[in-house]
Image 1 (cartoon, protein in one colour):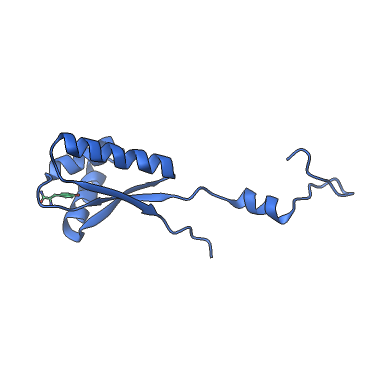
Image 2 (cartoon, rainbow, N blue to C red):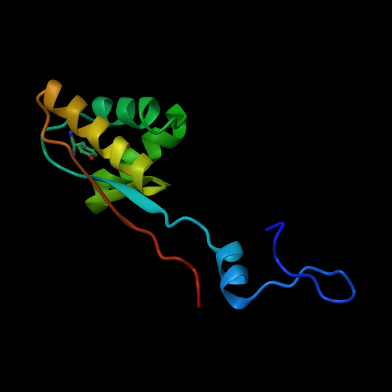
Length: 112
Ligand code: TYC
């Protein structure tokens, strides 16, 4: 930015592309847990605490929401972090022989 032109009043002049770039925020992806009949409630709460850093109370509330409604949001992260969380949940579920499904999808940007 140090080479951006300055006008006579020595204020920084930015063209539209530079302004747009300054306003960009990374797209966030929500990570979803899906209900099933076989994964234990304890395992889901444990996943929410260990992988998503939720408190016991938050983890329990999210688990019950997923159990009642079919799915629920464990958190929202940049793409690579969300991909890592999905992989961690999937690996832990496979290791424990639970069919727990974890997916990710883009969050609404909130622009316009
Ligand atoms: N429905 C499961 C049970 O009753 C509990 C459960 C909750 C499973 C959330 C998956 O993502 C899930 N044991």
